[in-house]
Amino acid sequence: MNLMRYKDFLGEFEYDELERIFHGRVVNIQDVVTFEGRSIAELETALADSVEDYLEFCQEIGKTPDKPYSGKFNIRISPAAHRLAAAAAKVQGKSLNAFVAETIEQAAKSALA
Image (cartoon, rainbow, N blue to C red; front, side, top):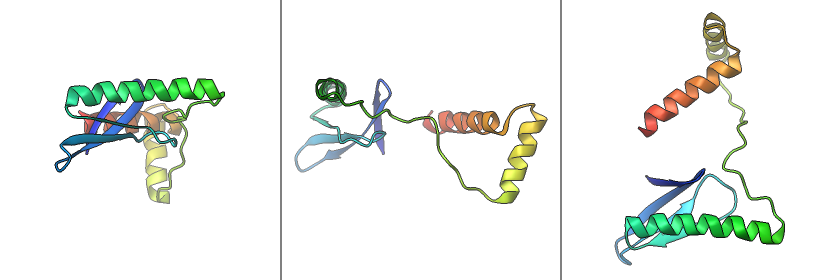
């Protein structure tokens, strides 16, 4: 998976060998925002231009742009994992929410490094 960022928008892209062009889509919003370019530099510019066009278009029509994420999500885990996480949070003097949020952030940063 090939990813690039512009502001808080995450673009996923692939290379079309037949057409000799990169095609991409912003993947962390519901609305469809696409971009393309013949080089990585061109693709980066196209992502930025597409996001700016999207934000401008939303403003023109009075629509609130999709936010990349709200910061809230539900997760289903086993009761044993829930118990273990709650105990670990307590040992660290944190709420379960703070413990899980920090753990996810650390794991995500490690995965994206």
